[in-house]
Length: 272
Image (tube, rainbow, N blue to C red; front, side):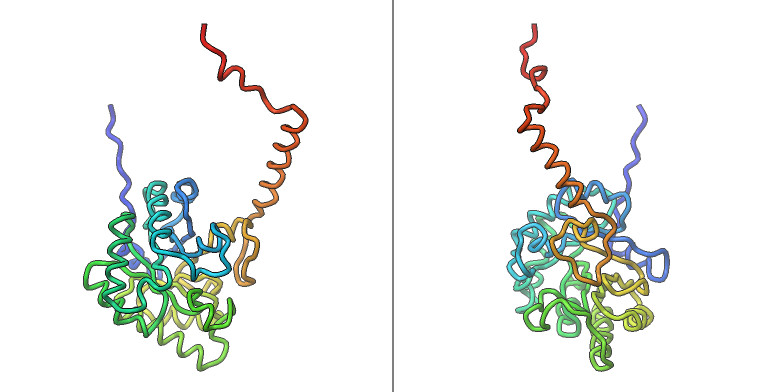
């Protein structure tokens, strides 16, 4: 019997080493089955707190809890075997202090088995990021549009249009990098800013609505597939599965109502 070769799962260091190399491909996932489907095609999977909006119908990510992130993180780890799995720390679980952030991040990593966590915020979170990295927790940063700050930034809008705002976001990315983040998500910023951030920092930038100027790209899977009720203007879609699902459900309903639903007698018929 031949011995199967086990594929090594990618790590945070593998992603860091991709700076300026082949573009990094990433998607979100919250389920074992979608993780299994996308795993061969992506470098890392983000279990994003966007699950609050995508799975639970919340208007923002604010209501998401650590328990929710742990539950879905476990599911994704069961489905993915090759990609690095990164789990978001939800709002209110890390901002109070670096000690709080460590307790939350350690719990998430221990209970899910993920390879890294992600948290939002630039310079104000640099000390926390450094604290986590020094204690063995790989951290992915997130600057630009930070959805957990929805109530203070005034909605899901493109960031960095004026020079002062652009300088602030660029400084945030540098601070996160200097603190030890292995990669930085750059969300919803204008292309010149995304390009300058990518050139200015030594770790990969992962764009979402930030142009092809970044070292890689990430999208919310349901947005990319056309399954979301609402998608930001800066997010590109690559499918329209909602139409296919509606059609399949309609065909199923018609089959049931018309009596044309297949018989299952062969399943339940006793063996003779």
